[in-house]
Length: 84
Image (cartoon, rainbow, N blue to C red; front, side, top):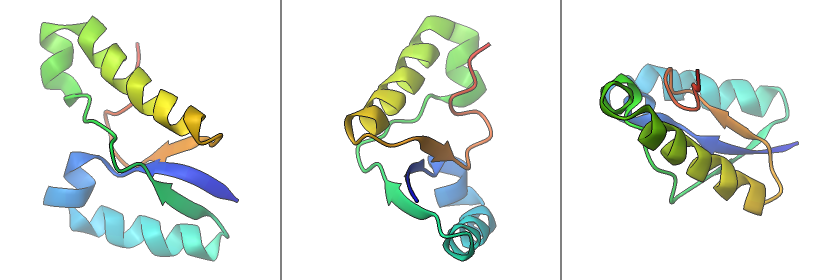
């Protein structure tokens, strides 16, 4: 199974153990992660406090990138794609 993957800033930068866990786990489960190289951060809670509309637009952009590839999307980021 192929799934578009956006690791997020924290998993890729500050908390590498998240990425070190996700990659082997998905491999074991037979999930082929296709990273979205042009995915953008949605700014987490910082952008949401200033502009929820901007945060939603940034998250929607990542969803559209995955949709262009015909894939569902997965992220290990705690705040990405959180629309409420």
